[in-house]
Image (cartoon, rainbow, N blue to C red; front, side):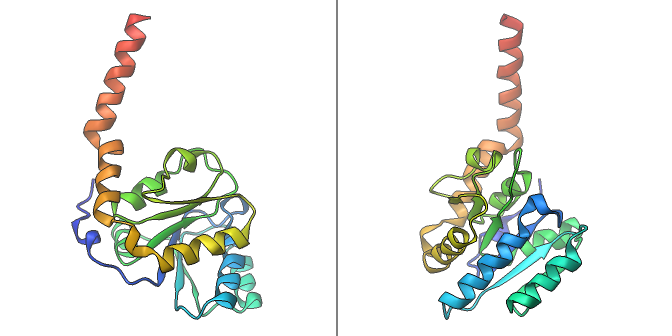
Length: 191
């Protein structure tokens, strides 16, 4: 695991991150709608930086222009591991508005950098997000997503990057995962 200590610094309260494939299932279209709603309802400055590639990039870029949010939304393309780490370290929240997510490794990676999360109730995120590390919203609901983004923006001080990172390492770090495997193997041997 990378050293994420520098991620524990104070981040600006203006920058959201998203990473994944630019495909329908990932809900980036919903995120763009939420950005529009948030832009229309707050004077607070913010941006959303999207890391990844996919078949919908051009369509999503056009949607951002049509919604009038292209000045707030940045399509970064595919990033190297180090570039993605830098993006996470410079963010103040990670957003995953996916329509379906089996687990959400990217959420674990985001918490390992101390980022609070916003994600949809879409499968996997429910087992990762707690009130201490983020907010769950309903799928297909850009208005609720916008409210969660505003909640994080205005109450970022209630989230402790140090605690979010510590809980991520406790739950998903190497020693924790090895202990879980050991317990599973012992249980299987007993059966």
